[in-house]
Length: 86
Image 1 (tube, rainbow, N blue to C red):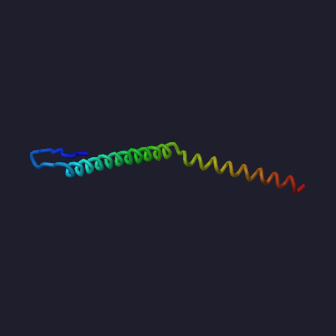
Image 2 (cartoon, rainbow, N blue to C red):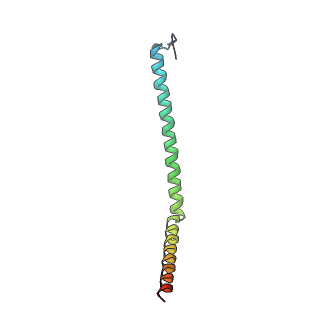
Image 3 (cartoon, helix red, strand yellow):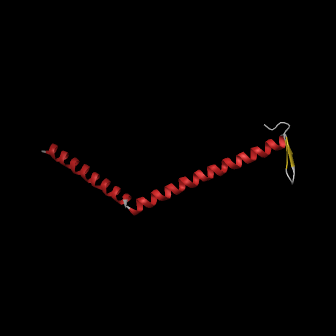
């Protein structure tokens, strides 16, 4: 708190509650700037990850692996079904 404190600048004078309000607004502004920077960093990291996935065709490779796995499961299912039909 800034009880009884007075700050003089060339333009204006802040004291007591005015100083507390001013500092609260400054702190909120700093906090929001920090949040904005964190969001920017997260977006930048996501963009880099997305580009890495595209450059290395990881999404296509993952889909191919999933399709091959599904085909294998179907084949096993068919083999088991044929085993019990005999």
